[in-house]
View 1 (cartoon, helix red, strand yellow):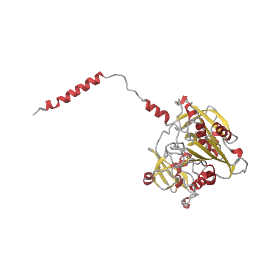
View 2 (cartoon, helix red, strand yellow):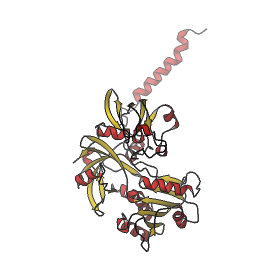
View 3 (tube, helix red, strand yellow):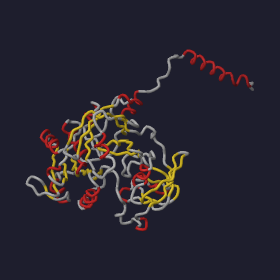
View 4 (cartoon, one colour):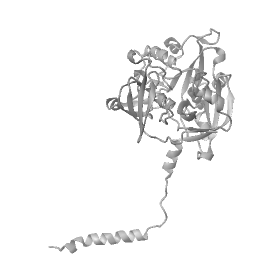
Length: 404
């Protein structure tokens, strides 16, 4: 029988060979990043720093803001995107830290030249747009997310012809698509049914007309609710109107606009009996009051509850109104709460409900089945029904600011 020394001789030899290989290896330091990681960081940055370099007025209540990279804060290039996606702006207004998603109105080709354009409508009673109108000027520096959202043409998912239903500033993602089609970046046909109140209230009307003259793959049908003028459709975007302009071949429907338009359009589209997956919605921001939902408990209306917010080792008790989301309550209290789409879909604001009750409207409930089962909510679309406690995750929140 071999002795123990004989049994381990091969291993000793292996150790010697390994040491020789290590000693003969290069002393050049290992690379800290690889090209694939650098590409991923450029395409999907956790944050981008932007600087306003041009502002274009569209009447008294709409403006286009043009952005370039804010190299002083470390952003050398803007992230690429798909036409129809949005970025979420991160702002500090007075004592509140807030986010707002806006569809990118420029085209992906513009992003390759480090340019974004956001076209924003002023909401006189709003919290963010009046601040933008009063404070943004050429040179203003803004922090934003990477591009996000799923309202873009995907050949494996969508049909070759898209009917875009837009209302108000909901035209912005479709303008980006139309521009991308005109530039040859996207290969798809686009018919836009664009709802406005009056003919002089059509946002980006001249720009859209110009694009339709540059390509026969884009068609725009203006629909006026408050005027009956020759050359325009009158009324609302109904199933009959969709059928009037639908192509002979199969098509997909993309929708972007205010909540009231979504509710009307969804009912109309349901009568068309399109196969599952043919209809896509752009995220439309804050839902507003939940009081009109059929399953909302009337006993909770017009009440104010105590909301206990846990962020790591910190805990604060704040007031939360029953008609405002948990996210808005935290923003009012000056808490840096994570959010992006503000519509219940992306899950960036996903938080654990430790105790208490919250209401989430069924129409915007984007939670996974497991989240519903184990007590997680999306704070952007969850409304308090009692005193409650939530545990909020920490993303990259410390840098949320607006720079002048």
